[in-house]
Length: 150
Image (cartoon, rainbow, N blue to C red; front, side, top):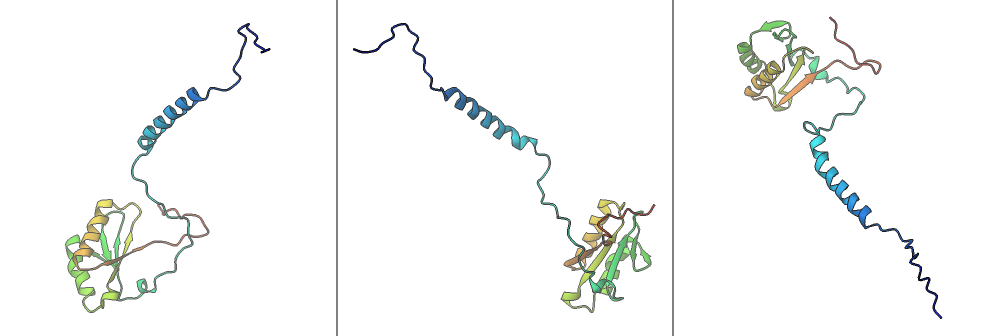
């Protein structure tokens, strides 16, 4: 004797996962398409907050070439103010007797200096055959950034 209910009350207690999988795949495709559109600009690895490096002792020497670009766009070598056209020959003269290892030009750039002037200064330095350009910055004091004096 077989047991059949015959009343049509047979319920299937299994979960039908096919519609749920379809929905998840559609959501996955949507996220894969939209995520690259959310990024703005270029992804760049930013430097971590590190201890201040030791001061390069070559900056302190009188024979070193340190070019300053002030916030108002004026160029200085030491305390001498120079025009942009005078920088190239002056740098070349100062680096004549130096070996390739010592041919470094250091740049001190004001916080409010124009970016275009910085690029022009780097190009002037490169035109003199200098491969090493050092950027001079103030040391961070006490873990706080120092605001420029106004």
